[in-house]
Image (cartoon, rainbow, N blue to C red; front, side, top):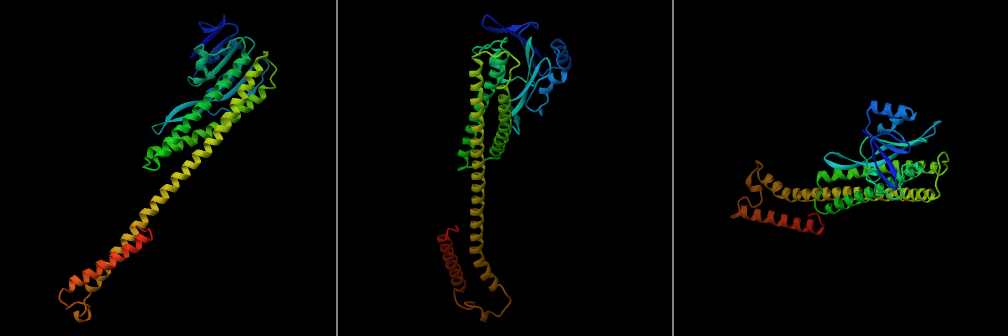
Length: 313
């Protein structure tokens, strides 16, 4: 799908066709659409479709008549029945006459530009547009990180009661999302670093401040990711420790019960042997069965008290 946007009189709106200084927004384009735009702007189709490959690396390339920038942006998907965060490539191609964004799906990063909610946004100021995209991406990463931490807190609160299998899957998805975020945010930082030395396109004076903001917010996202990875890892270790402790308690209780039940089993086994009764204590004593039963109960109670004091029960 292809959409065209153009800024006029300080307002960005959709236009029906390609025009000079417009923004071409391509979402999961077909080969025919890619060939159409590539021919119109004089770029390689492979560069135009680079961001459609989910394994594409972030980078900046400088062919003769255009610039290709690929960055990673956060996205959501559902895995194992739970919401998970991933990163997907966003391609940006800058030429003298227009700027093109290519993504495999609709992105929250571009939504505010499309809805005309961004201050100082203009399709004519192409390099500023790139800075704004990277700033919005860093802020969206931070928002996703806050959401990840809230989900971790919900799982941690359940640890004291009962953790369901779904919570374990959720914690695994959070760990996986943080790994994706850590890699992508750092690579986006490398792109920002290269943009500080970028001089091919016109840079307006206020653009430097915007670039600095993008670098600061991206670095903050890096630090937040590292912190939340450590916290999630601590939560996982806490859950593992609690599970091991609960298993140990169950094993202690079962062992103690086995010891207590072994007393009547051994005594009844001895009296069940095929030997002369005159050699068995209380075998010929009136109320012998009651006496033996009382002795068994007394031994079991004594063992119970000992095990209780040693916190085995």
